[in-house]
Length: 122
Image (cartoon, rainbow, N blue to C red; front, side):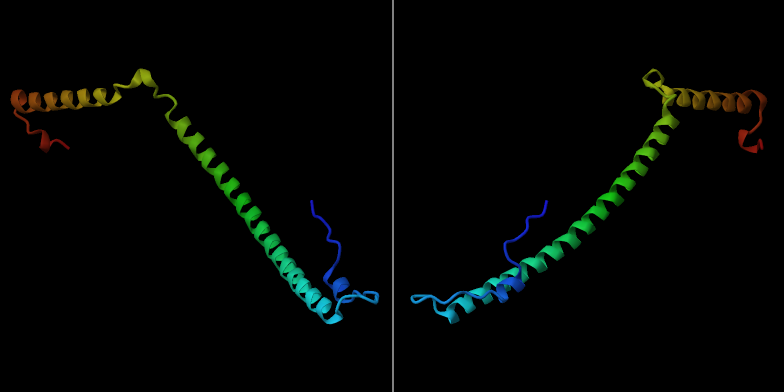
């Protein structure tokens, strides 16, 4: 929600004051108003820079959300690949080890009993 200022820099620049008998020094008033106008210009510049920054940040948020969704999808695909391996199958690596032992024993049997070098078998 944007708050509207009481004066624009142009209104301050063109503001005319009535003359009073015991009034303020017009030169001092002009100097103060000039400084206020400078401040307004700085605020306007900062405001425009801020809106550019906000737009850039909103764009970055959009990109990061899309990237996050992609990563979530990839994670779900990976979970689906491994969903059949549960805690009940925690000894799968032992099964592989046991298979290697059995292959080794079969190779020894072929070598010892049949006299065939397993490395010669293709």
